[in-house]
Length: 318
Image 1: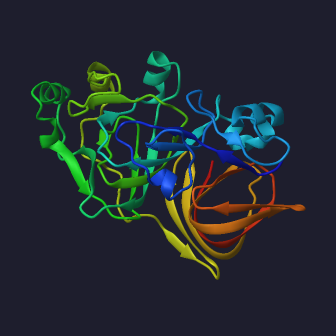
Image 2: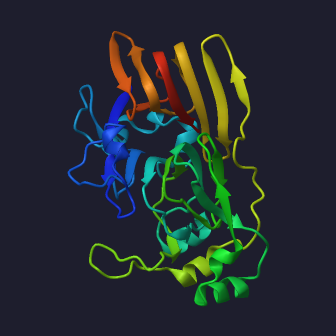
């Protein structure tokens, strides 16, 4: 086993921009690059290996070859590969939406639910997003406000700044606003229920599908209880500053601002490294890999390597 660099699947959703191509180096045949699925085993867009003897294979194919030891005992505790990591460039605002929990999603969608975390990599001045409600309301009121188009009157609109963090448990109503670029860590699921899409038309010229009844079934109509914004414990040593972005039973995510060298090694879990800024060299045994902004690397459990450079990394493990 060895660290593998992944070429992401790129999605051209109509609300996306071009920054993932022009600033992060993602390759796509489409003009729009709304999302890059930077670490993905999902059937809707798996990552492809770019280095070494397994070049050209998908991440699911690699993990089939390597077996459970590659994800470690923490990752192997899940039936399927547990997480999906994205870069999201919202040139326009996304739909108002919600994700189901595991129980509902397994019953209705055939996959796990979707709890996620957003880390604001960059944003335009005045950007904002929706995160839950400003007050607790009943399910009946939620339904009525969807029907009479007054839902946004009770949505919690939050001004955002670079570096803000939002932990979004399944069932939380949310919407990324325009002018925001986000790194997202989520459960390995693509189940999304749209409540409102502002009447936009899809590529086929028809309004995009809404999933109102399913959204009513799963939405927690309440004020957010998880702290958000400039949150997360920060620790500093000689050559790096580490900020804990999120920690739950599904994943741990950190921002690591490195100026020098650090070791990467986890016996019980794989490690995902996504370079958000700068560049570095990853070294193991007699091999090395150059990493730059927009590059994603999967380090198997139990594999020792070092990374040296001046960069910001999204560091995720189980």
